[in-house]
Image 1 (cartoon, chains in turn brown, yellow):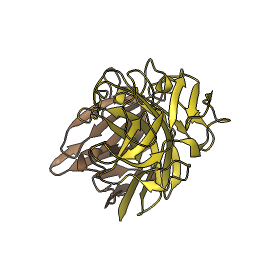
Image 2 (cartoon, rainbow over the protein chains, first blue to last red):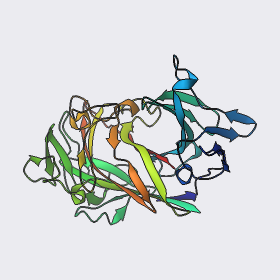
Image 3 (spheres, chains in turn blue, brown):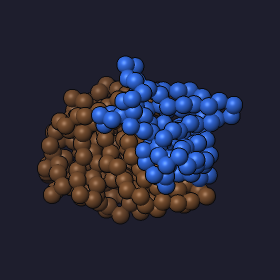
Image 4 (tube, chains in turn brown, purple):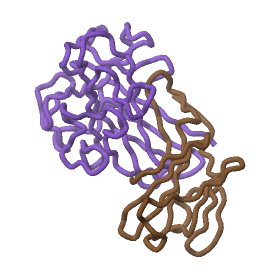
Length: 112
Length: 204
């Protein structure tokens, strides 16, 4: 069993579709799609990604979540490496482009 | 505010045992001791072992791969792998997760096995297959648009993050459970313990 502190949503700075600003709030509690999302980790600010070949007028809005990974292997303890901040760019055609930011600043982008 | 996450198992579907910090989920050829499985054979038994993989702690439900559409549950005859024949209580493990600070929604959920080092790399010399039993469905497709049930197919499996079993999204709730059936086969002679099982999901 692993007990750990609750998930930290404070890095998320979200503007809802209505223009209201939310900081540190679970994304599921904010009306979607968002007008904008940034993740702030220390001195670094991470903006949403846009896949190559796409332009801004194809964007419907944004979503956000914390990605959690639970391992059953050498340790049942969840480490910081098993949490990452995800910003999702929602395109009008239904596709979703993910930018995943780990707590140490490593960034991965891909379709989901 | 705390998060509680547990991997639960037992041999009767109550999931009354929790895999602790030193126990390991193991696959064995015998139900009273840890015994090697033949190369390319699938697990006759599943159990929790000690950290050294050399002593039985408790038996778990066993889901043995037969073919793409069949499974043997706890050494019984082959049965169809579908909602009518496989219940949540037949699964190998139930993974529980909750954040007691509030209700959460889970999405982009996946399960896979890897070598314990690089998520994209399958475990060395072990083929792992899996399915998910939700309240209303049995899921065996990989992520990325698979519709052929490749997660429960000896030609594919769930080795590495790109081959993960696609798990169902979960609606807002105070706690969440994943019921997983897992089968494994050694693909080479030897002791193979460089395997990590992983459940991933987005929380919002």
